[in-house]
Amino acid sequence: MLFRSASSTAVDTDFVARLTDVFPDGRAIQLQAGALRTRYRDPEGEPSFLEPGRVYRLEIDMWATANRFKAGHRLRVDISSADFPKFDRNTNRGGEPGPPIPARQSVYHDPERPSYLQVRVLPR
Image (tube, rainbow, N blue to C red; front, side):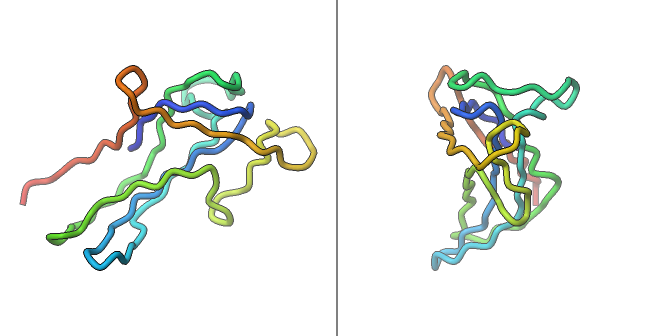
């Protein structure tokens, strides 16, 4: 799972996280991806739009996955606002008709607004 503090200029947008195994020679293989449409950020509550510019705690479920990393491999997390065609496009309009609206996404990683990837390491 990925936890992070983020904001957007849009009322509804997507945040996508990709977990990747990076080989010593630079090759990269995507292991898992997860997406969050921000209006559904509260799984227990009703859908609600963002207040543009406000910082929210978002949790992206990366679903269950496992991988054994060989020596020299690295783990990479890529953050984007889309993963089309795997996930539907988000026009950033909150479901209103019309052409897509550009959105500026911000991910924070300071002591007051941390972002992190939670990874379990199993014993050998």
